[in-house]
Length: 381
Image 1 (cartoon, rainbow, N blue to C red):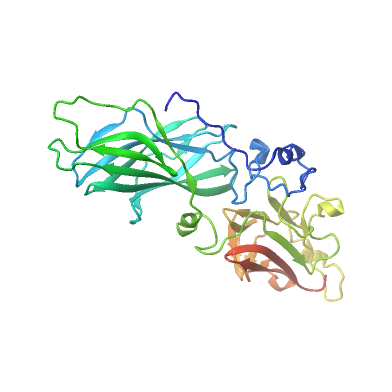
Image 2: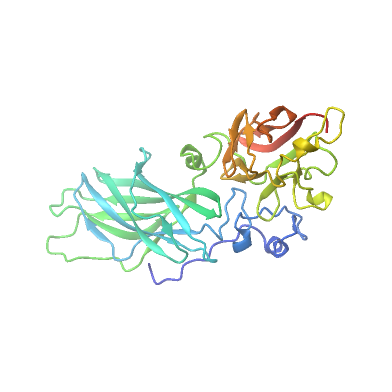
C-alpha cells in the first residue's frame, strides 16, 4: 500500500443520530426524529445503515493500483494489472471476499479466481486482474467488480462494488510493444492507465512512485443479478420496510413500522411481548373456537419459537423452537433459515398447522417492498 494516509470510512447518518444511538433503547433520533436503523453488528460497531442497507463502519473497502507498476505487452496481448484491496474498517470488523470479476467495456463479466477469502481490518491483499482484449489503439474501458460479505453470528450481509479504469493505447506499431504505465490522471469514477509504444529498446524499467485509488461504487443491480441480495433481480426488501400486524390481540404484536430492535431481530413465540412486560416481540398462543386459551397446543410453542429479520434485502424467518414449524406446508427444524416471499403461510405447529398460521403479504412499488403485512389466521384470538 502507499504510505499516504488512507481515508476514514464515511458515516452514513448525521452526528445527532449517532449520539442518540448510543442508547440501545432508542428507536428514533431525539433531535431529528429519524428512525435508527442499526447495523446487525451494532453491538460491536455502533453503526447505522444508509438508505441502501450499508454500514460503512463494517464495510469499508479500498481498491488501488499499486505503486511501482510497469508492464509491457503487444496490442492483441494481455496485461496484468497489479491491484490491491484493503479493509478500512475502523472497529476491527473483517470482510469476506466472495467473488471477483473483470470485463472490458460492457462485455460479459469474467470471473477471476482468488485463493483467499478473509480480509482483516487494516489488512491489504493483492487481487489478480488481467486485461485480455488490448487489440487496438485508443481508449479501453476496464471494470473490476468485488463481492464481499460482512458476518455477524449466524447472519451475513452481501455487497458488490465496481471500480473503473480507462486504458489508453498509443502507437501499436512500436517494435518493443506498448508500455503499460499504470498511473496518470483521474477519469470520472476511475483512473487513466496510459499504454505508450514510444519506449525504445534500451529504455530501462520505469515504475510509478505513487499508488492510485480506484473509487468503488455500489452495484445494486449486479448484487441482485448475482443473487447476492434481494428476492430476485427485480424485487428487494430494504431494512426500513414497514411491518404491519393484523388479527393479533392487544399488545401481542409490535407497533407497525420497521424493525428497530438493536440487533434487527423480532422474536416470536409463547413469551409475553415487551409491550406486555416480557422479552418477546410477537406473542403466539392457540385459542379454541370459543375464544378460550388452548393450553395444550400453546405449550407446544416455544417461548422463542422463531425470529424475523431482514438480511441482504430479504425477509428471513429463522426457526429457534425445538418443535419446528411449517412454511407453505413444508416442515423445517430448529436452526433452519427460510427466505420468505409474498403469500407465504407460516404454521408454528407442525402437527396442527391449521390451529394457528401467519400469512405474509408484500406491498411493492417499483421493485421495492415498502410494506410487509402479517395476517394471523386460525382459531379465534
